[in-house]
Picture 1 (cartoon, rainbow, N blue to C red):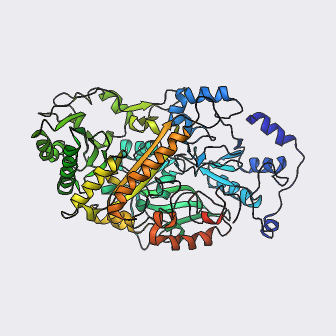
Picture 2 (cartoon, helix red, strand yellow; picture 1 turned 90 degrees about the vertical axis):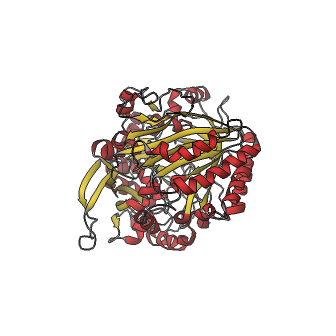
Length: 623
């Protein structure tokens, strides 16, 4: 049904009043309602909700409907499904399309395209009073499908992206206990590029967002939240100062260190969609360094034995030269016997990235028969204010790959023999009406329209960097790389961070293992642009199951030296065993109590969220 037909239908229906809230409170229901149920809200009830939210109740269209396989196949084949902005603009789609043997994105029946907290409260009240399954979506980047649910009412915050900068922010009620500090307040639908444009490009400051430019900040913060430079600035949740949130009773609450402090703590890493619907939030901002630096190159080993030696050498080099708050992002090990360096830095001069890596490059150069080197502009320093400025990248490319002497972007190639590939690093939304800065990193291209086969994460403790443990870590990395690609996300472990970043993360609901981990290991695989029921685009179930087994075997090689350190909620296995302990560790009991206080009836359900074990996997039936 299109919007016009929908509004006509509910407008002509006879008026049937919504039952008062007190009557619903007296009824014990163990199963949420679906459209096929007789007690599904009437057209008149939906009409009243539409009026309450200013006409912003919409039927949810689904571009991948199996009822029209030809049109769905065309959508999957089109460039739209490779465009995260197109996906984000569809209330019926999610960035990830599904997971083999787990879930596939399915549209809600209706969505409230919320513009403010009052719209959200109206939707929450309607869902509670009518016993509906509720879903919440901002950026829609959940790998585990937490931002969608069939037969549900969706609260869609996409259009809530107002941003306000503060030079001296004090959380409400904290006037006598906290000093004013620079901060930024953002609507719940704000995505990373919008935040970076306002705070960094225009404001000249830093805010801890994520690495992917189209991730929603609200979900990032509630999940814990890491960006490329979290080793210095801390987790996103550790930078939260205040949130406006609608709880299950429909109340609009302020949550900070002085008001509703327990709810505030739960929102900092307790998992999005479990405790309420955030309508806006305020994050502290930081001074911006002059440069962000990068190191991007690959070392290829000629044999397995050479690769073992390479891994061992890099582990030692990392501990001595890179294990600090200047460096973040990734290193990758794989069956192809290559070591891929994809790292970013902050707080260094233009020349320092290459200078720091020079001892390792010298070690590689001493064995030309064992190792070869390749990369694209392997060492560069980018003016920090322009790092998330798509127009600046447009102007300076391909100079960014082949810089001239005196250029504002200085790639320090010198005597390093590399293969330089002059390709853009950003893609742009070229649809009519798109904003000039609607862009995404090419490195995130594979996440749009991805169907997951398997995904695992594991905290890697810093104790394995000690001299007597480095060989064990290197052996485990080599053994895991025989099975699958494995990436160490160095910015997602806070060991080596400064005291203020550690203190901020300590006062969050995340698994405390993040504080002593120097990295998060991630192993994942999947296929692009697949969806069940669409001929020619079906997910490869058999191949996916084999990939999941490989991923499990790969991570088990690391668990042999780390033990059960836990996983990162936002990036982890859909089938995570003992997820309560894995995601939150010793913090889970406190989270469970806060869940009972603010959502005693379990209105807010997400897969593997706090309290989800009390419900059927689809969130419809109370167990």
